[in-house]
Length: 141
Image 1 (tube, rainbow, N blue to C red):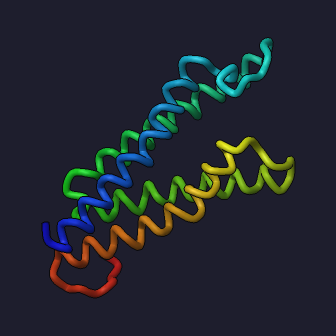
Image 2 (cartoon, helix red, strand yellow):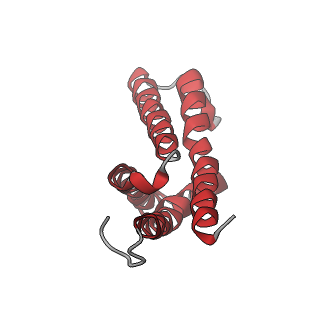
């Protein structure tokens, strides 16, 4: 396998692995509601509704990341939009950390992925796009 394909394939694998989290957590949040976070019922109906709504968004974002995997070198706009949405969620999670305190380890890991790994994925995907187009330079493609 040549270098161009190995970089693309590696990116596809990493995106596939990382996208599993929002898909699985989204489904579990829709099915379980706030109980997913090991909180005791009863909780306000509005909290349940909001939690399941956001879990649906989490699921949709994960599925949208999966839609980037085939021909990942041609999905720059979608990839960047999803990255921006994920990064914005990470910023919101950071606000919670600063205002309320440190969450569980899983949420801290999510914060790391959202604010550190996702920007790195954008850079990597741009590199794959540029290699596929033959420019070899990092453009806004």
